[in-house]
Amino acid sequence: MPIITTIDDLKRLHKRRAPKMFYDYAESGSWTEQTFRENTSDFEQIRLRQRVAVDMSDRSTKAQMIGQDVAMPVALAPVGLTGMQCADGEIKAAKAAEKFGVPFTLSTMSICSIEDVAEHTKEPFWFQLYVMQDEEFVDNIIARAKNAGCSALVLTLDLQILGQRHKDLKNGLTAPPKLTIPTMINLATKWQWGLGMLQTKRRSFGNIVGHAKGVGDTSSLASWTAEQFDLRLDWDKIAKLKEKWGGKLILKGILDPDDAKKAVEIGADAIIVSNHGGRQLDGALSAIRMLPQIVRAVGDQIEIHMDSGIRSGQDVLKALALGARGVYIGRAYIYGLGAMGEKGVSAALEVIHKELDVTMALCGRRDVQGLDRDVLLVPKDFEGQWD
Image 1 (tube, rainbow, N blue to C red):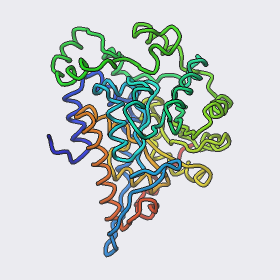
Image 2: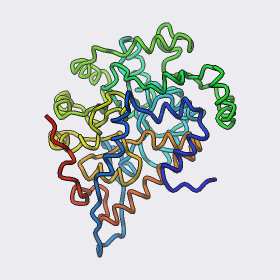
Image 3: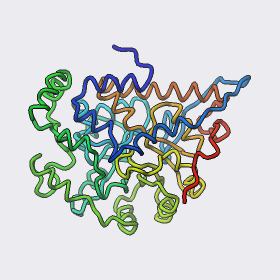
Image 4: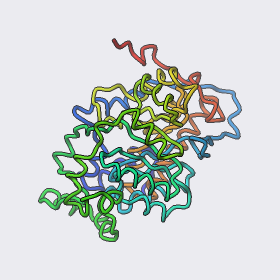
């Protein structure tokens, strides 16, 4: 087994072992990818304040996210097609998260279904919903999530219309992959991935195929998906969905203080400051750059989480110190999954946890719940002056 010390180690293995179209699916943004790049590079502008001669013993990274005890305030974000990065990928990621003691969020666009993940885990997981025009499908999938014991609904708000990701179009992204000549040439070099896929029955969108009207197989899936994202999703519909769900509600895709205030008004339990990993509105500011003003706007009224750009434990610490109560990793755990399956996801969590713990200590803090801006050195113009 290779020695893994950073998330980049897993990323290199992922690129080597996963088919090109699925690696590119994870490692891409929309249009010019400016926002995708700045999600990570903006973290580099924030520096850490070293403190010495302080008691570093008895440290704790334990916290809570929406009232749920967590080993560290890091959740696994919903990522579509996770089961194409590695056979039964959602099940493996959920099991790794459960063992580590952090939340796992299942995507509507997962390969393994809600029922598949529930069957292979003991602890409740979270379910992410894309709102579709087919209300019967939405009602049914909410009911399925309830029946599976999901403890939170993560409602994605920033994908009513799909941002264009050039790599996916050029690669002819499908699940399972269509066997074109370029694809077959690439798959011939990914024998470990292929062996895994041969041993599973889960190769398409398990939450949709057989559950949505007119979608009985993969041939009808693409047209259904392209037409179904609800362009009319607004705050009234969000309030109605909250009522239908009846449990903990997290709103994902908040990048503006005014939208954060709306989330407070409808009674959401938490918001995720996010730009969808730079995969939707290219040219939007990074999530970490927007986080402080959203915290100032509503931080005393709602629990604030953050995703987009987290690649290390130091990134986690910076987000928490700027006011987030928890963060989500997407690509960081996908690299691990594509590299080494469940063990790779565990390795990603271990890397991030160690970096968070050691960095916290060297900043003179012992409890992750007590982190604040005092441990950071933030450029005066970090948030920028924008008209």
